[in-house]
Length: 171
Image (tube, rainbow, N blue to C red; front, side):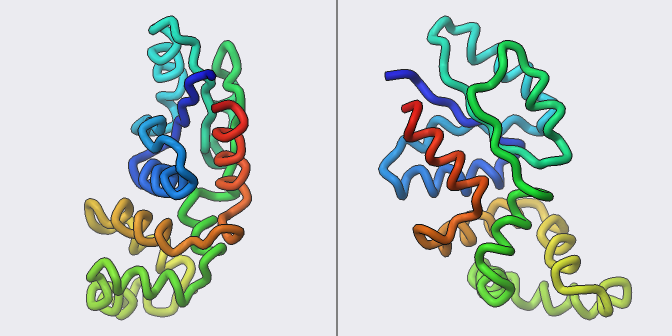
């Protein structure tokens, strides 16, 4: 059986993928947060240098496809989110679940304060959510973990389903 490794852009993506792999009884330790998609070639080279010839899969954003598709030899699978994984999760869970998740991580008051700021007050909630997630260190990963916990089987975003199926297929 081949060793499968999943490359993801950052730690918040890794948190979600690890949680979902674990929920499927698969090894969550096969997920590597690259610290940015531009590091994909270096990570692929390092993983392949060990001689084990792992099956490399990647989860990324449509806008970053070019980095993922330039790796040589090619990755075994590239799975793309429309904008990014957070947006996919927001869409899959719906606004109410996302707001409940914000409360669950203890950021409900900070959210209310953020929404009251003049710069953000009249913006669409989806834009507010996207900006709010990145305004404090650690929030993105904490919220990603909570959102991943809330995903129910069959309700996962399509790129995640395809990725998880790829891990099962190759692993």
